[in-house]
Structure formats: C-alpha cells, structure tokens
Length: 429
Image (cartoon, rainbow, N blue to C red):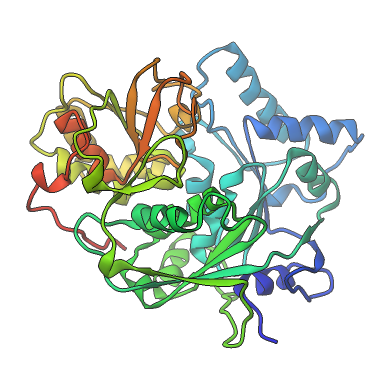
C-alpha cells in the first residue's frame, strides 16, 4: 500500500521509520517554534517540570510577533520573558523588532522550512510550512514543553485528503481565493483530524507566496497539517534560504486517501469570506457595494511581497477613501525592505495608508488596527470570527490583496477592475 506525503514525512521523523494513517508515531521535529503569547505558557510548563536543560537549543526558534512592538507593559514583559528564557537555556535564535517578522512568514526566510521537514509550533498556523513540501503541526503549549525536554512527542498519523489544483487562474484570482473556495466547499470542519495534500498541474501557476497563503489557512478547514508537492519553484526558493534539499517527498501512485477534491482554476473567481467564518466564501459579485471602515493588508497568510505588489498595483495614483483607514503590514522585515526598495511603501503612504512594521497586531485583536462596535473591515487575514479584530459587534470580510486595496479606494467592496482595469495577474518567483 502506497504512502501519502504526510505519511512519508512522519516516517522520516519517526523512531521506527514507519508511519501510516491511524498509527501512533513518536516524532522528532526539525524545528520547535515559540512566540510571545503561547510560548510563555510553554516556558511556564517546562519550569513546572523542573527541566534544567532543554534537549537541543539549536532547533528552537523564538519569535516575538504577536505584540511586537510591545503596546503596553504587559506585552513588553511577555516579550522579555521569552527573551530571558532563550538566554537561560542557550537558545540563540530570538527575533524581534526590526530583525523579525510574523513567525510563519519568517521561518521559511530563515531556512528553517523545506522539503521533508517537520516543524512543531505553539500556534495553529504552523501548517503554513506545508507550502514548501514540509509538515507544520500546531500543538498545545504543554505538549511543546515535553518536546523541549525530551526532543520527541507522540502523535497520531492523520489520514489525508488529496486536493488537485488544475487549470489557470483568471484575472484577480489568487491563492487566497483557492483556499477560500476549498473551505467553502468542505466546511470549517471538513478536514478535522486529517491532513490536506496539494498537487495537480495547476501548481505551476502558483508562486511560493500563493502556496504559503493556501497552506496557512488549511487549519481553517480543520486540518491538522498540510503539504504541497515539491517542484522547481520550491527547490529554487530553498536554494536561496539554505534548507537541505535532499529530502523532498512525493506521494506514491497507489497512496490511499480518505477523500479527493479538485479545484478548477479556470472556473474560479475572486471570493470574499463573509463574517463570522472563513467558510462563508461568496463570489465577489454578490457582496459588492458593502461599505467598509477599515482595510487591513498583511498577516502571516497574505503579507508577502506578492501581496504588497498586488496592493500597490491598485493603489498607485489613487487615494484612500476619506471614510476608510488603510493599514498595510509587510509580514517580515525582509519583505518590508523589499517593498521599500521597489517603491511600494511610497505608493501606500502617498495613497493615504498607514504602513506598519511586521506584527500580528490587529489580526488577532491585539493592537494597531482594532475595530469599534459596528465597524466593518476588509482584511487579507485568515480569520473573521466574531470579535476577532476588536469589538464583538464589528464585522470582518476576508479577501485577497487586490480586492482589499480596491475597497480602500472605493470605500466599499468593488471589483478591482473598476479601480485598475489594466492590472493583470502576474507570477512572481
């Protein structure tokens, strides 16, 4: 019986070297990722265990991103707590302020994600790693404390749902629309206790940034993890980051799947996920005219340089509507610098946007873009639950960067073609 990609990755990191759906495998990760919120809980649990020395400080990455830069004393203390933990246990990889980024966007840049890799993180969007033919799994803080102490953790090998992406995306269609369409089809719990495996001939039309956006939101369908097939784009990307490219995995021709789905790019149009769920994907045409108060372009799913370029294509020569505040957040310091080099930040500022340093910020209702009662936001973030970005009576519509930027100019949700009719989708390496 053939194996799926997730089964192969788990087998690579299993004590026995064998892993099939339903098995309980003892896994050793390549990377353990902690941030300034859930990471603090992990540290507390580790200290309660009486652990004096962690298993391997070199595999641990500490990222202050949720409250970076700190907005108050409490958040400053949380970041300091994480930094002090790193110093105490000899962890050298600590990132904050101008040297940082949102953890799931930063980790690939650091060369910590690549084919065949296994990443454990105390955050549900650790599944973003799947874009690079790896597996990222979010665990509870106590589980990760055990990993830090022992170097391993048991987990049930999930069954796999195969997603074949076929065709060519049309105008203003992005990776964001692909994942929103999939979640709308299978539901927010459609992949619960399962892994998503992405492949198909249409992958060649998606750059790494778009794959990252898709992988990031696999958890919004309930998936434990996900993985994309490896191709030349992945190999080219990791050749620049430093990941060892000798472990790419591919599914066997007779791999066993719990279900199969096809995403037909030729028929896909831009989608908008209506509040209060990412599963409420609706064709853009059905929500046009919805007034907005805030537009947020950023997050670990859609704060990439591709998103920055798409937003700038809409905003160049335009002005943000007077009733709208536009917040643009490049996901990492490297993306910020690249956007500055290309003149994108100047375009945003000239249009009337507020440009932020990398931070999770408003995405999870932390700071720098909180919504008031009754306010409506169009956001490129990954969740639009009730109260997610502020007041419980605010509303969030999820969309791609083109659609979000167009809403900022129009003051309501519109077809991006009405703002920039000459813009066409481009593939960025």
